[in-house]
Amino acid sequence: MTSGALRGWRLVHRWTSLVSTLFLLMLCITGLPLVLGDEIEHWAGGAPPAYAAGTAVHNLDKMVAHAHARFPTEQLFSIVMAEDEGFVRVYLTPSWAAYGRDRGAAHWLDFDARSGSALSPHSRQALRVESIIATARTLHTDMFAALPGRLTLAAMAILLILSLVSGTVIYGPFTRKLAFGAIRSSRSRTRWLDLHNLLGIATVAWLLIVGATGAMNEITTPLFRNWQQNDVAAMLAPWRGQPPVDQPHFISINRAAAEAARAAPGMTMASMVFPGHPVGSPHHVLFWMRGESALSGRLLNPVLVDARTGAFSGHVAMPFHLRLLQLCRPLHFGDYGGMPLKILWELLDVVTIVVLGSGLYLWIARPRRERAAARAQGLHGASPAMEPAE
Amino acid sequence: MTRRRRSTFAAQWGWPIGLAVLTLFGLLSALIGEGGIWWWLSWGALAMPLLVIVHHLRRAAQGSRRHHARARSS
Image 1 (cartoon, rainbow over the protein chains, first blue to last red):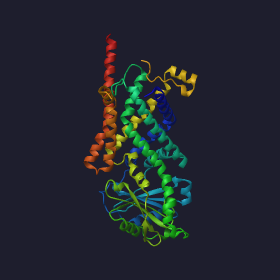
Image 2: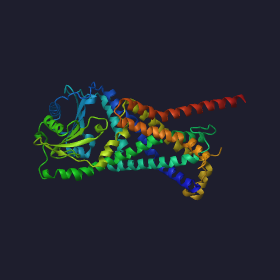
Image 3: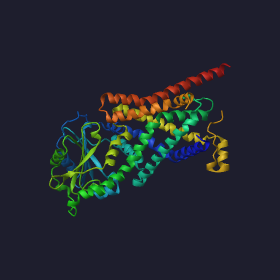
Image 4: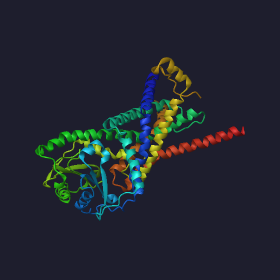
């Protein structure tokens, strides 16, 4: 590599890292509780016993009736089937306008998946834990800044990818004379440089995948909205102009679910979204159906059932790029290979924090002559020296 | 490319490339495989980068202890 090219890659590595480091540290730290979020919430709340897969789910209409009885003025929002974990979660919102103003307006009631009985409201401790996890999740996904926040974090993920690529390129010249993994103990900065290089190069593939899928997840929401406004809206054309369905006039949810199951043989229901939901149809119950295998279980298929008549209205075709996004989503969360995978995710996250911290230290403690050169020549004249003086 | 240059390339990039391949295998085998052996392979593969890091950290710690011991005895 010519010294000019090396200088260029070093500048790319330095500045992409410097701009993104604080965001990435925030993402790594908030990511720690999120990887084990379900487990932490279960531990705090005393979750119901899990049932074997395929357990028949109890009467959904009864659960909804119970929810309506407790919150008579509220709107049904969605139902999420967590029968693997033993419960069904019914979401409600005071009104769609309230949800539009504040996504925190939606709340939920849990029901035992098999008996259909309402699970006791969460203790104050459980609620506190849940709110901490929810805060971490919001920070991690949009920093309380909705779409601009998402796009900012997506941009930081792209900077991370540039930083990883440039870091790998300069890893070559930096370590040419060293055995792999050697950590010299001569000077503090040298030790941290060697540590940064070892930890960085050993985990670069994982971080690249997690960063790339993180960026993908951030742009999924606008892409889904776009898909919904075009493809789904075109499919809903026959219903255009009809007043949105009032929730009390729903057909039976059990019947709608049976209709959706008939329309998607071999699939089980993952969730259902009620009319009025921003990502749904004003005239339909939108069912998200998933397959049974590991791979097809990741692909959610939307099925529309008319909320007035209970008739199957159609499958919604999903473009290839959205299916690919769905398939890659779990690669960000690490929730697809049991508890050992989650623990590996946590450990790799900790390694990443050390890489970020050591990188920041290396910049702060950079050799004085380099800083002097930078002052004298401006940023682009930074010294090409790549090895700290021994 | 001379033999010597090839061998330096292998010495320098063998571990990084090997760990990257293992990582990608580990990520995909749990995603596409149906549990069982594929999950175990995934855990093993993804643990490798961490084990390599721990190995080199321990070696560095031992090396620096020896270094300090030498410094004290001299």
